[in-house]
Length: 319
Image 1 (cartoon, rainbow, N blue to C red):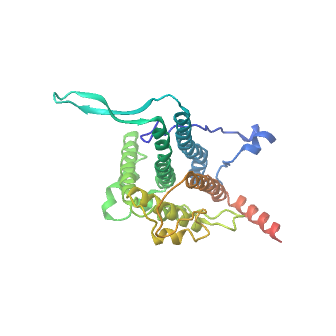
Image 2: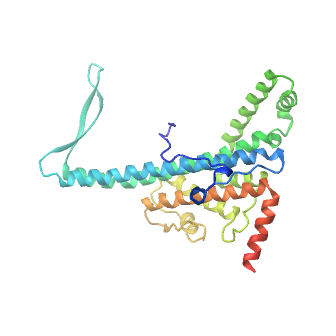
Image 3: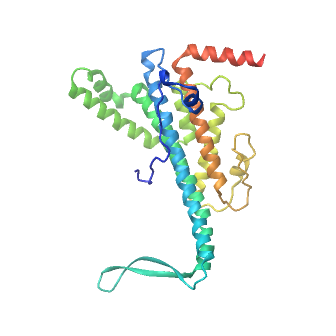
């Protein structure tokens, strides 16, 4: 379980080619292929990560959906209670002697408690959106870091990284040198990530796709890598507004909602910024579709032959 309380509620199964049947093929939503060029083995590693991350993000959404459902179950329970009972809230208080004790800090009738539970839903929707965004951010950096760990040249440009380049050259001389290079590279990646956090996730995503030479998959005509990045920028804007306590929809968010890549969000400038379960659902759906698109992009990056065949196939369908 992670610091944010994440755990997998979905699971992820790997089906080998020889184990395919009509039943499990229909359920498969990731493809893993060997790269044509051994130098591109990182593409297969990322393909393996697709299924794992899909399970993580879906589990994140399910946990928040369960929490919201729990509010409604609790509200229904308290609302149906006929006996004059009280709902109490406890917390820790320190008495005059310095001893910490658990004390009742609030009391409500069951009818009041039922109404209060339903009012909590907006808070859970906002925090659920932030949590799902955090998962999306983790995916982008996880993929980019894996690529850079295999292709670290762009991290070592400039005289300030001369020592790092030296460690890389010497890494094959011994196990000790290899370990020193690995430690130094991880330190450089951590430093790089801390700085990139301020660039905007959409720009980090675009940089990853550009450096990794990923292209929009064949057959995709309505969306592209560029439009996915614009969607990520809009999602990031909502997350930042929530984090910083903004209560009113700004013009920038309203403008984003008018674009075809806005996920169907309908926030209006000047109106209260309020999130519902639907907003979390739309973010989860986008994340799921993004992973599918990245999977196909990685497959075509790993095998130019497959991309050529896929392009030919989709062109023939249009003619």
